[in-house]
Image 1: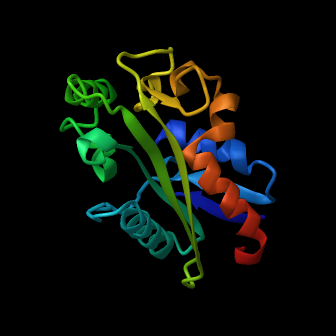
Image 2: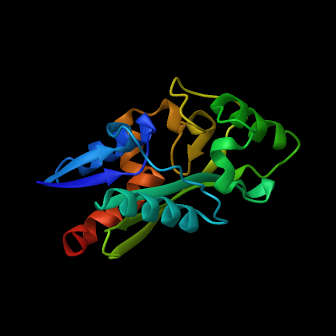
Length: 194
C-alpha cells in the first residue's frame, strides 16, 4: 500500500481528511506521525502559494506524495481579511482571540458576508501536481453559536442553512465544507494523478 502524507499536524484537519479519504487504497499519515519534519515558512500572498510551499517542502523532504492545503475565512467588510492570516489573525494561534477580532471588526458593519476558502495541492516528489479549490459562502453571526470551537466555525453560518458550522455534526459540516468541496474535486481526479 502506498503512503500519502497530509501536510498538517492539526488534529481537526487531519481527521477531516482521514474521514474523506477512507475509501482509498492508501496509507494516510500526517506530520504528527513523524519524529522530524522540516520547518515551513508559509509566506505566500495567496492560499495557492501557501499550499504549494507546504506541498513542495514535505514532498521533497520525505520523497512521498503529499496533500497540502491552505484555508481561511475571507470577510467582505474586512477587505477579505483574515484571509491567508486566518490562523494567526489576532497575533498568536488563538481561535478565541481570532474570532473576537473578526466580531469586533464587524461591530458597526451591515455587510456580514464571508467565504470560507480552501486550496488543496496534491504533489508527488516527481512534480506531478493537482490543485483544487473549494469555497462556502455565508454570513458572520453576531455571536458564537455551537459547541464546536474549531477556528471560526461557531461564528460562520453557511448560506442556505440556519445553523453555524459549530452547531453542525461533523458529518453535516464535512458534507458542505470548503475543504470537503475541494477534496471532492481532488477525488474525482485522484486515480489519474495517483
